Image 1 (cartoon, one colour):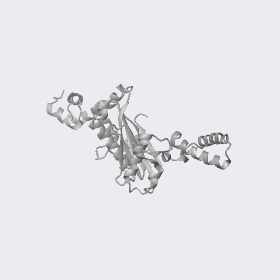
Image 2 (tube, one colour):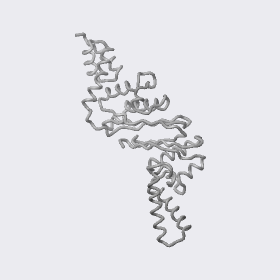
Image 3 (cartoon, one colour):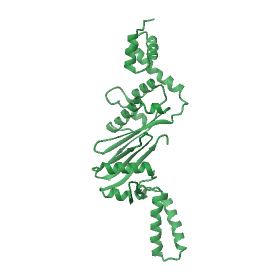
Image 4 (spheres, one colour):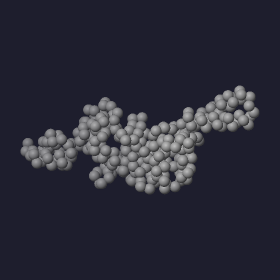
Length: 278
């Protein structure tokens, strides 16, 4: 058996970031060959994931990135087993690398497609970075979902990284502050759809018919009934149906979200609201 020196173990540890004893065992298995030892260490990822396969991944973070001009945004959710790992630098570096590639690369519509792409900085693929980080931390990770959105886009991420929003508008992207404010509003108020047109037509029809029947019972003339129903439908959109543009803006409740956007020449187009694990 080849002699495994302390210097060789140290060099492998610096190369991989893995614990000393793990590096020593890999060098012993590889007969002292450092490159083979790296392959041995990489092969251990599958065994680790199999061993921890049933473990719950209830912690993690949502990573968000925007282009400087607000023209595009991206989000990646990565789950892990424990809060300390989710707050660790290695986990954050993995998430930031993935969301940066998603934003600045060719894009991806699936986790697998994104993982097959190069890691920023030319250090292999994101899949390799993902496996190396798992091997280093020794905990199960799951890349849960990815999304990229064309702008103008505003974003908001809660301080713990467990709630994040991308908000998509139509119009001039010049005022990034209002886009971020609307994204923050979405995180707080949790609307269901962006515009009235996004609601299920049958749901809207049924609610209007119910309100018409109620209004007719008052004996008022048809033209008054129509105005009453229109007013109550706005309340329905705002309070019950969760229509973003109809909601009072969280930072200025005397105006609706649509009014705030219109003041900046913008219209709401869509949003993605993620809560970790949901």
